View 1 (cartoon, protein in one colour):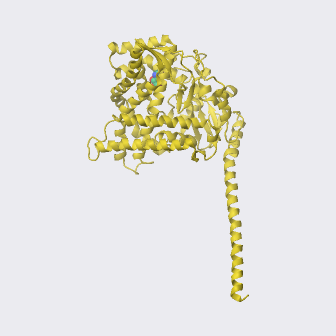
View 2: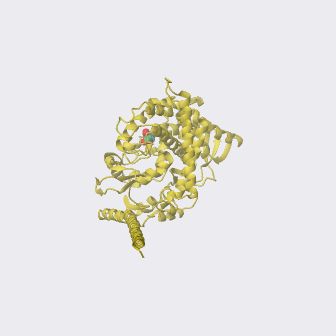
View 3: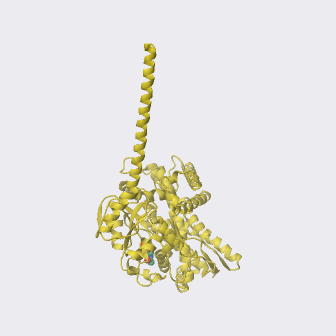
Length: 544
Ligand SMILES: *[C@@H]1O[C@H](CO)[C@@H](O)[C@H](O)[C@H]1NC(C)=O
């Protein structure tokens, strides 16, 4: 072997060695990464929950059994499954077991608060209004929406809408921009659009009643959805009726798939949302369809009005939002700018929030009126007095519909659209007698609070609108025990819009029909974005 050959051999050996070393080093790195991420994951799903549980247990708060990863989902799903698919309604309305089973299962065991695991998120559920008032109002700066909740809701309504955007300067500046849409004068201008929109849904009900020769037994919910969709389309998008309908169809499907997946255990596996499963593919395609529709709606609008048009982009809600986005000084105000993306996402949110909630509450109110003819008579009488000789509703009329308002609020109490409001502590904070560590989610148990006999009296499970005769503040023993629209800084922007909408729909219904119980109605309220009846709302409508 000559020298150069020798050198080659040595070099080859060295290369091999360095390859080996490289391989070893790589193995060490990979192993370290795995160990570290498993460690981080265990830290998140075991260490932190256990730590927070210890802190809360020490303060005497009731505890549910700890379950890694899936939390108490399995128990609560099993609990809800114990209730029949038709939970007969007989003057006793407690929908929590099927709507938010965790609360129905654990409040009776632990009193006014307890700790449980929602997936791997540790939550303190509370139904004490004094405590929740601090969380939502005086101490709200210490709380945000939990990340999971924000992401999940954001899938339906868009991440940049007012319900999701939370950093305080952005939230406040966007809210200030959107608020004027719901000022009394603005709402006044929408009444005609609302009446027209409602009329198109009611006309469909009317046709079915006519086909039945003046009386018909059918599911009214689809036509109520149609009415609230038309109301929203008219006040928000003016005339883009067809696209409005399509948008709503996509949203409904998306909600169904997303919420259906929540009760499957596979959903709680980390990263599951990114597997190309059938559900996930469908979610992605619905979301892109919604994006396209919204882009088209907005594109049509900007084209119709366009540059240099003095009148702006139209005077419905979409037009006003576009105006704000095009004129707001971008980047100079505090927080993120209100831009085109904000318009898209807020449109999506108003669309979602404004239809399902309203249609479903009206449906439940009709069910209650059917089961309580004495209240139906009173409401009908009021409507006929206020709207003498079948005339259409105007603002003055709306304000005089007091009994109808009481009926709606009592319905909202028994079947609150949002059964709970979760808020995660972003700093350690003392709320009344409890130390809340950073990272713990406080869950305001709205529905359970609405059904607490300590607050509402022994007839708490009965439908009794009389309790609202002097308004919500004196309906129970605590002025803030009625929270259908949340409270504090995040109080629902559209409260009065929604109240008007519901009053108009109910009043127009009562003007035309007598509502009766149908033997085919199956009572099974459940939760998918809002509380709703699983099998629709079968009722008998009889022309008056
Ligand atoms: C019903 O509740 C809404 C929202 O809290 C309130 O504005 C309205 O005054 C209430 N009406 C009655 C009759 O209680």
